[in-house]
Image (cartoon, rainbow, N blue to C red; front, top):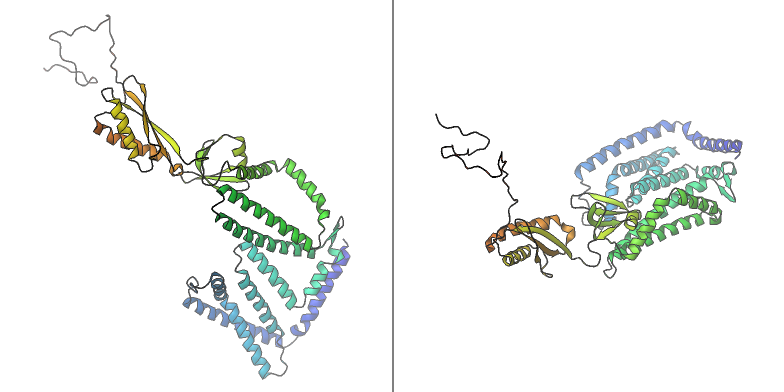
Length: 459
């Protein structure tokens, strides 16, 4: 790059700008036009404040179509600049009608710049992404301002001059090419992202497709649209894609060393969606986490738990670790609770009462029916195990176990059976000097009611 040539190009640009403004800046009409512009600013601010006090943007055009409602609200928000434009138009028309050959260059520039700003902001208000909105609005207004000031051609020539360019292989990179490519790439990526969101929502309406296939198709559509957008932008800018072979090789090396986990998670996510082992809505447990599968992204899968937390688990963990899918082939999940009954209870009545108690819970499935099994003869009680099935494990399993246990507590006694109390209670005697406890003397005082306090005889 020849920096002397770049300096010469910038000097020429500044000279052209000075030449374009010299006549206006040295004229007596300069303070007059500045005064009129200041007066227009005061009128615009006062009018916009009065309109905002009497207008509620949130309820304005409520029943209109979304696009028209958005445009109307944008116009109300820019009411100050609009009034400023109208005031300058009236002032310029008055000058031209009352004065012979007036100088109104600054008024015209102010009208044109403000009009461009309002039009650009109103049109870009449909872009919800704030960053893209600002970039598009700023770029469009910069180009419009340079065109209004008649500086677009000199600036374009300076940015595209060989002095400001860099040769990479057979590709000449200039600041103008980089600016055009960046701006067009942002716009096309935003359009591709908006289209992919629309198509994903359409795919989710197809009830014939499983949730995992819907997510997989949505991801493939997004990747395809983004790839097409990048290729179209590079081709339209005249960039030969073959010269990017060096960059593709560098990306391959980066994938091999620094991006292994990212690529592994991406490939694992595609595998999970393709084989349908895990899909949105499944209830799973992986490691210490138990919950319902929410969103399946390119890098991670979100698992919603009952305590309000949402775990973002890398997709690779679902491939390398053992995962329990409670609803893989069926939404039926069997749960069990253990309890004990006293030996004076009828075991068959206990079984019937336990099954009826489980059926009294709304979430317990009627088919297959609950079953109660006598599991063991314990040291102090009969031990039972109650099996029952539910179809909504995502709603929680601990809470339904609690409901079944409470129902057992309420219904067992009504069937003539008794739940065994915790125990057994054992009394240990310490023998002193003999193998059997000695009989108390006839005149000995009775043992104390409270072992911790001695029972002294009355005086």
